[in-house]
Length: 153
Image (cartoon, rainbow, N blue to C red; front, side):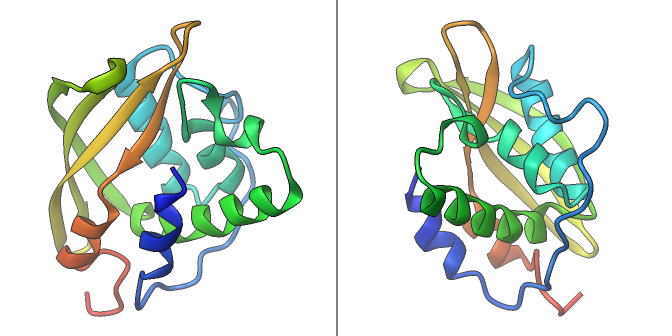
């Protein structure tokens, strides 16, 4: 998951995003289904809610928000979340096909639009042993190439 750091720091032309106020009901980690996990993740970005995004972003061990072990990891995740928000805010989306992946993960293709930018983006959803679902990864590079998080809209 730390590979997000390099990819996200390469984001160019992103507008600044505010931290925002946590949305009601969005602060609890995980989701009851894979598609709800994707919806919550994108909704957190649209709301510019860093804490809700960190609650929806995770892996088989749970949310990133609940498993950071140091203040430095927490700060890095919050910086990365702000970059993710730039790509997710003001987006519309439609979840398309799913495919099973390695380690029990599932891949979803999601059609996303931000202004005039449009892309089919691959999301990876992970399941915890307690059957909670988190967005583990998504293809932010495809979004960058399509013009998401750009002032050229």
